Image (tube, rainbow, N blue to C red; front, side, top):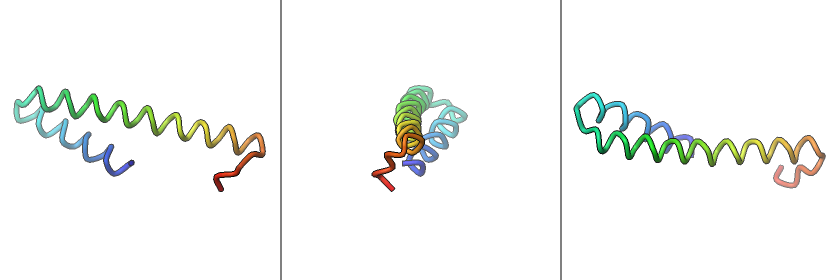
Length: 57
């Protein structure tokens, strides 16, 4: 998922520099959504780990 996030960020920057603002906006929006999902997952895993319920590990 991190690889997809990095690819979308690169696509957004390159397409924005080339003038394709619609594509840049869409890629940036998808990158924000994926970053939020990753952040929620990391926080959830940390909360479970601190509570001693590290079932995922």
